[in-house]
Image (tube, helix red, strand yellow):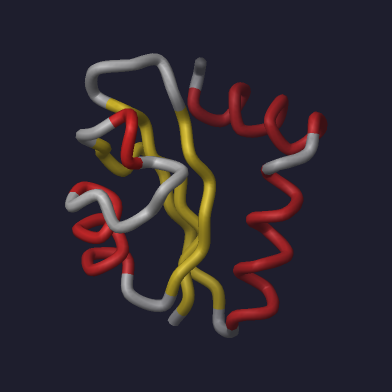
Length: 80
């Protein structure tokens, strides 16, 4: 399984959208400062994820959620 996920910084009003094969390990990477994009806003928590059967579908969902329309859809889904 592959996952598209949304992280929220616990201390800042920041969100991060990504995709991975192992969600638990990827969250640990983010919280251990191994990503230059998320390092300044530690710590992070998963607020949403969805499973996909292959990497291509997970990546397509990630790219969609990074568009204006995708962000609007996420805000509606998550009540943000």
